[in-house]
Length: 499
Ligand code: HEM
Image (cartoon, rainbow, N blue to C red; front, side):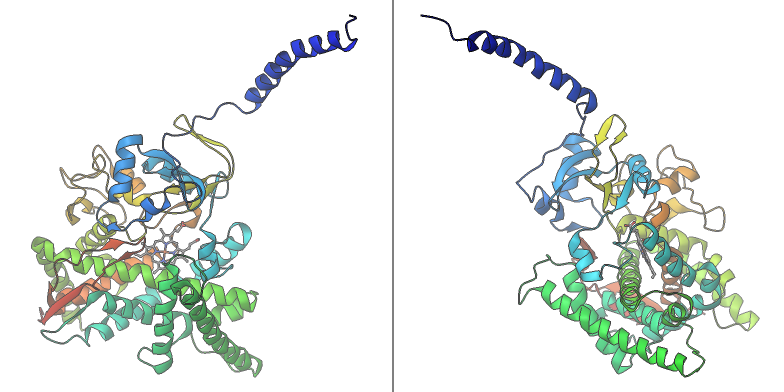
């Protein structure tokens, strides 16, 4: 029986094949070294651990999911969230690194549903040059100079309007009142809409439906909150477009546009398309209204638990009000605002403990190595700022409302801490590096200063004119993942006049 001529060839191949495989694996490994991913688990197919991550929890905590994951895997862990592999960070250093490297190593990346509802030109979803241009417009409109000359007055006017409607011994939702205040302020500032006016009220109603969709699951079926919100979105945009057309017509008729609002500003100074202007306005209304109203509601919620803080606020605001009375002044000035030192501590502490914005959405643009861990290119990255603000290794008794930890030594601009309550072992600059309620880096909140002015001015008039009790102690702020009081934070107020 003669051997087939193929037999030696087969033997050579079978000898060479494993060798070839070893060479291929060697070169592949050299090119793609084994990744040292952070520990963690990917959970179920597709949804991963999203359901556990988004399960509601009290706003002054990090929630069970986060707590258990940090205890098990540490402050940096991997997971699968929002349908994508993700790195979750409760690490102050990594969070800062992510935000500072926006556009270089990481990029803003909100779920597609957010773009669907806020619009593709919304600042939250834009990246690159277009984001830079839209941001420049927003910053211009929310500039320090405008805050001093215009916005402070507007904030005070709208605060007094809301507070003057509060009735003695009545119980009502403080959260709704805070929303009324910030909505009226933004609607006035953006489109010169008068509070209480029928069209402003209709817009507000549509906006409530719209907001329910922003926080709901993005299911575009008849009857869902998301579908209703998309409908409200187009009603709101139609409304803004009509306003815009009126202004354009007036401009074409050479009429001087008197209104000092964002709509006029973009029409005169930018070359944005109609669609871009509409999305910009809607996203500013959203960014500027939801966040600061929650922050004010949180301050109203935290303060009754600290009578000493209320007393110190009273002393501070009585002093300011008396000095103004003596000088014959009525409106608050920028100097008054800057002099509210203890109020600034209350504002900081409210933002630290309440964490209006819990985490941000980013993705890695390149393979990144941090503290020995690899973050692969394209992965979702979630810096959880709330976890840093509530970290017991950084803030003493983090669940405790303690405004004194922010005691200021320098016009309220930098933070320091009283003994025993500072972020441990930290200096002023470290405290400000780990405290990021407004995000950071090139996407730092464009309205951060306005938000602080809103909170301080609201507290000024609230403290001077009212004493309030929480009507339902069980109504705590919850994360849904937007912070919200399920029962609306009912309060009972008593009018007083401290000057
Ligand atoms: C307490 C109130 C507020 C909080 C906690 C807050 C928080 C934040 C945070 C964390 C971001 C960064 C989002 C990211 O990086 O992905 C942001 C962005 C932004 N915020 Fe605020 N915000 C507040 C009030 C306001 C107000 C009053 C305005 C005014 C209209 C505003 C306008 C914006 C805008 C335009 C951006 C986008 C900035 C950009 O992408 O460049 N915010 N805010």
